[in-house]
Length: 192
Image (cartoon, rainbow, N blue to C red; front, side, top):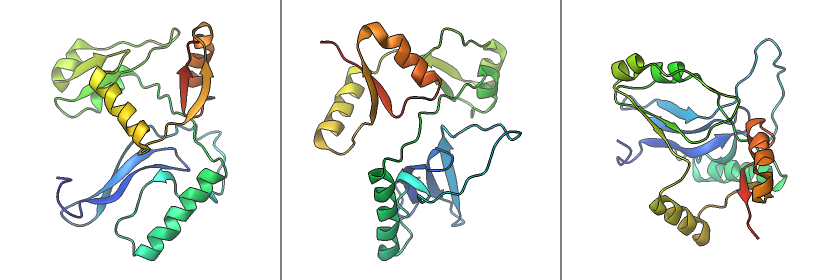
């Protein structure tokens, strides 16, 4: 679908207000649908609205349908936000496995990338069967994924945001910061 010219209306990016990482696809009827994940969760009872002055996106979200001059203005807004130090926390979504399973398309997959000692859940085999779904857990990326990531960083096509570095003795503090939303970007372990 996305190989067809004009199907991507807005490229992959991240919003300033809800921290959603998303892209927008143009439908055959020519309206756009946002496909996103990792958005901010709020409590409607305590949420306080705020006025945003930094533009709609932290990075990406190139609006390919805009005239060239307007695309330059949008890109400058993103660059000003980055230059001012605007960053969004990593969103650790604590979603009950059953809820996750109910939202999968048939044949979908839940990928578990990390765990927390005080968090758990119940996964229903019945729901797995009815969803024709699979659950994959991994503590590691494959060698090919690590090589691809290293190539992207080395070429300058992506620049990882490292919010904190620590040695192996303090890894639990790093994990706590991630869980509590106090870590901007990634945490890195350094062995010396």
